[in-house]
Length: 259
Image (cartoon, rainbow, N blue to C red; front, side, top):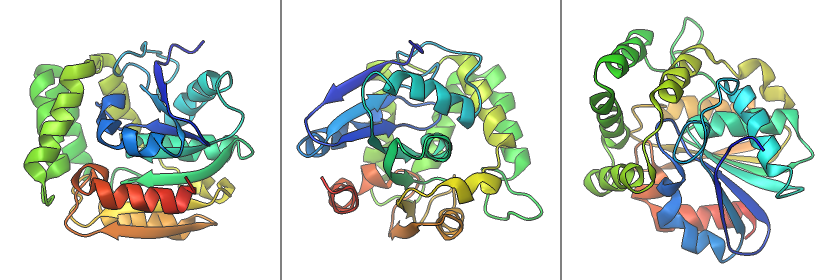
């Protein structure tokens, strides 16, 4: 076993839920009831998050995808992936490496490259990410709290979305500091653009109009680079449109995934 904690619910085609940096599987709770009526929902805690063990050999999205594959091998022969932010990058890597395993990809607030560069203007400034990493070393809780606040800025329901994000941490456990540090290091260096052509899975990319973490331009560009993808943008949403617009999001997910 890879040490990944999972929770299963419902019946139907398998749908694997992958959360983002610093959170855990509880972030999906507002959607689980609806999704479980049409799918067998398999929610996963990423390495070092929630109740999953930290694995120093599962730092990059590709390494985490392999760890996830080890867990899913005993649970499902074929599944769709719903990945949010970092979880979306892991979903892309898993789909590229195991194309016969992944039926469909639903990527939320996902970018192939998290930081901006000379040929990629759609990311966070490297200095801003470095500042977050430094703050993580000196004031762990403040760093996580400020990142959560950044995720909801501009959202139509920012207070309730922020409350839901914080509740997921309180109810299920904070991520381990070494997992958070490794995650930031990975986000600063990962560039999935060279391998996107390998992702032949039908894909829906969802962005939020006011996302300050992964700008909608990044999500649009991702959809344009994938062989079989389309893009949908939620108005007045930020980094977590599935929390600010749950009814609309579930309807879109059902339409795309077929549940």
